[in-house]
Image (cartoon, rainbow, N blue to C red; front, side, top):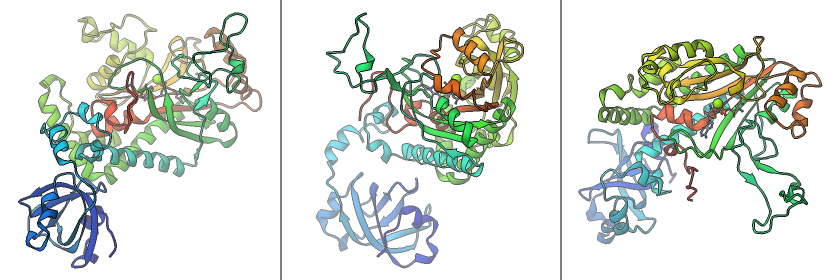
Length: 482
Ligand code: 4AD
Ligand code: MG
């Protein structure tokens, strides 16, 4: 007998109707000791197993509870009841694992709706819930769509190192990597740590971005992208920051800023369209949950669109492209700013934008995704291309409702003298980055790229509100369980 997934049974049942099939899964509910709702993770939907208990051992039936794992064989038939297309008439049931049911009842199942925080402490049961099942199936679909988009557009997937000697963003928020015995760290004659004696013979850290390495590859392969774990030791306990997250970074030779913005917009639309097409049942569930959650909020804080509607609008509407200078004007003249409603008032050109400002532009002012470009050079990284005005750089940030910045990128400074000057001004070590500067010596070309935080996109697509709930094992300040 061939084992099927529940997804197979529910979508593809025509040819196997009235055949005997076998499924394995976890019991979601056992109603009247007659109807088992069985789920195996392949889809959010359960299959109903009809149990005629007179045909089964009494002890077996007694031991089947919520969360039990079972193997069921039986005939697949058209369902008599409403709500499902097919069901299984059980002929054989095997209990697969022990179920510490009392422990389960007293801890996890007790509160009717266990909080999302509580579930974060339950590494495995979290995946067993409808909500997290949906979130992680959608996350998987998003990752697949990302690879598919780049593959279809002739990009090469590039793996950049997790351990690196470079600080790409120059923000200094890095986790060090060392093989030193921390109780006996070698010092040089000045009393400084002697990294020449460490494993790599130099100071190393976990990467904050694969961009600089991706740039070297783009100078030969043309179009590349990275997609991997990224680490930031910023101590920001927000709903949008993780210490370990996944970043996607395309880097394209011969692209300018406008090409880069076009790529970002097409890319986001492609991935969201893919999820709309391939994750229908999960999205319907998330859409309902999102609507319920909005009802709990005061009227003024409610989202204007439903979740699916919001995603459809992303695909349909053109993103609004606005220069930083225009955006600052809008923000300075906004009612919010004048009435002191921003936590960080916007006072003058040059101010860094906070998430509250980004969200004001997207949610209140424009009502659609916004791409800001040409930022003051002082608030952006050293590698961004200096514009002719001498004050701004060819940077771009894509801003989404509820999230703020979802993508950050730029055209890169390809002129070696300008790059060196910028590095000097911003205290970036030229010796450390000799290999990066070298890319500007031998056939340097205009090029551009950006970084998308995968979890911020998953947050947006699933309508969840905390970034910790869209990554399987969140790493945040004071938290590295499992
Ligand atoms: O804007 P960021 O810092 O840009 C870079 O790292 C560039 N090197 C990218 C490039 O041009 N290749 O980060 C890019 C994106 C942000 O827009 C955000 O979505 C995400 O990465 N991100 C984070 N996501 C979760 N937790 C954090 N701590 C994040 N920091 C950045
Ligand atoms: Mg950024």
